[in-house]
Length: 431
Ligand SMILES: [Zn+2]
Image 1 (tube, rainbow, N blue to C red):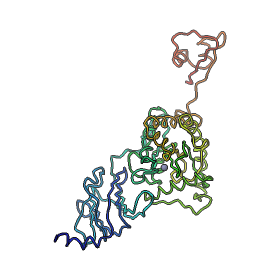
Image 2 (image 1 turned 90 degrees about the vertical axis):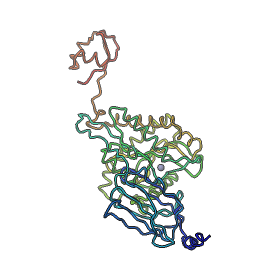
Image 3 (image 1 turned 30 degrees about the vertical axis):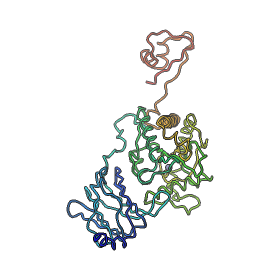
Image 4 (image 1 turned 180 degrees about the horizontal axis):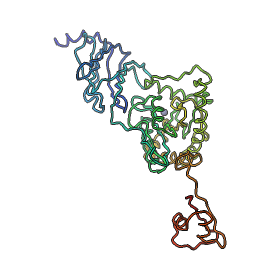
């Protein structure tokens, strides 16, 4: 009784509580999120003179309900989070022990649709085993086409949530991985996954990573949601310098922008400019070319998606998504379906459907590069000449005419003998 009597004044003074703590390691940083019952009142300082390196946060007028056990296990950077003696009876002091010094950013985020008040600690530094950008292909005579695949959202940003409680961030990561597998099986292409696990990547960093990987195409994978359960089907989006011109487009734009804020991203897209936010002329000129390419790629992907799923829109849609604003890299955003539609949510959760989505997106991408080959890649290789055999022609006659050898024609067409039939179609190899 004495203990509780003594404890009483402290608890009465603490009006705010720390309800849970979440740790999100990613290749470049670890994010620690404290879920608060109200806006946090905090100060912090670092102890970097000696090991263990520590970031100390004082939460004024706050008690702790959250458990601190096993936090930071997944992060190479955060060793543990523990309590320490508070400055006064009503406050809580938490210590984040770090493997190395990190230039921490500590900031509060207000409540939104998904989360309540939060205190966010961003700790730059290697936090998971790094998966580097695409391998250098300089030594190869013909380089591979690199496709950057961006699984939307992640970490503390779940994206849209389906009626059965499934998160967009999980579904799109699975589709992204399946797509990367398809692409890497193709000797002419290689995939670069922008996000490889369950963590958030700022939008500016996503496109920067794609540029660093020398990507030829940037694909951002998402699943849609709407306020009513009816809408369904896939859609493909490309960047526009104008705002979206239909209701759903505007809503989607707002949603993806919202999720960017939700992740605590530093960059905020300007919305007060009616003609879009891309005001620099040079930037615009760079954009025009990649936007046109993006549109062609989007059309090719839509054609293939249309063979395996219902389409919400049969033409590429244009909107000013922040994630698509990468100059020089054609960029496409794919909404794989509506997670807000109960039947489609089930579909999106099935491995079989995820594989189908991946295969059709891959096929669309391949078709696009076949029609728009990039110099120095396999796609730009001269296509073999087709020859229809006419009366009186022999292999040696054809070899002479096309400046090649009988062996080469035989090998290219899987022929064992040398008998030709009138009307037979032969491929004449180019070298
Ligand atoms: Zn999304």
